[in-house]
Image (cartoon, rainbow, N blue to C red; front, side, top):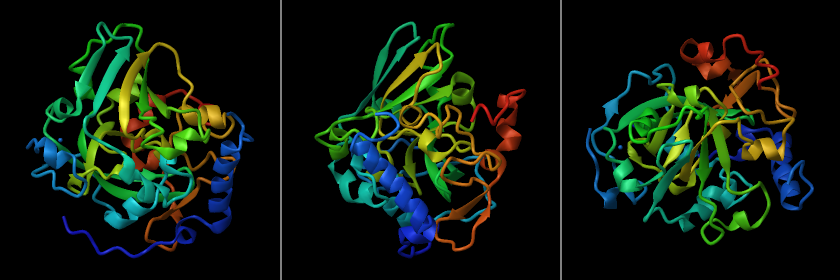
Amino acid sequence: MLIRRPLQIPSSEITTPLVYAERRDFMRLLAAGIGTASLGISPSAEALDAPGNSLGKLISSPFSTHDDKPTPLKSMTSYGNFYEFGPDKDSPGKNAHRLRTRPWSVTVDGEVKAAKTFAIEDILSWAPLEERIYRMRCVEGWSAVVPWVGFPFSELLKRVEITGNAKFVEFWSLADPEQMPYVRIPLLDWPYVEALRLDEARHPLSLLAVGMYGEVMPKQNGAPLRLIVPWKYGFKGAKSIVRIRFVEKQPQTAWMKAGPDEYGFYSNVNPDVPHKRWSQATERRLGEFLKRKTLPFNGYAEQVASLYAGMDLRKNF
């Protein structure tokens, strides 16, 4: 894949200075305790532990979007949110080198017949790796188009037997203060936990990603394993996953605890439901100046709208 040479993109070109400052200040208020609540071919293990290494031959997915050109790789690795490494957009790029992605394992428990722990090397052998070019929309009003590499979440369900009580799935991120310095500060209620309804997780678009742009996942983007749910706001995609837990009742996620009136459980991209601090009607694509209209479900309505038939999406935001 041809990747255009990226431009340096200051935060002010992506998010307006006021909005950027508000988000940053919100996180710092949380830190001060004033917030609202407290991989065809299986590459070698060595290759998969080195960001920037090629993941080899990939399956081209029919779920990819081809309407937009991919966002430059540099933009995606230098601008983003990963609060375990700090509150600013460049914090992950500066601090995520501390993250050790080997050894790594993921525990699957909760409403399952038998809890299991899988080494990342075993997980990477579950299925041929696909490249899926997905639109990504951040709740802050910026967006991107990213060629992720991974496999459907449904591959996990082939390897564990869930009980009839399993209705939701939690995704727990690593929370190690030695590797992640900001875990020592109550920016959020650590560990970072996100969740989906079971039918959402089973949807063919839901992806467990191990790479991007044909390469091993960069640490600042959630190595070695992260969740991608393209019709939801980006924060729903838990990074550096160490636990997947099936539960019966709808859980409280990290952002729901931090701002229950700002972050809903579903968090589907919806231009008609503004965030308390950001309009969701438009977005600015990384590397572009002009804004564009935001699409319902981030452009995936045809595939996923039926999941929410009969629901009031203003109340169930």
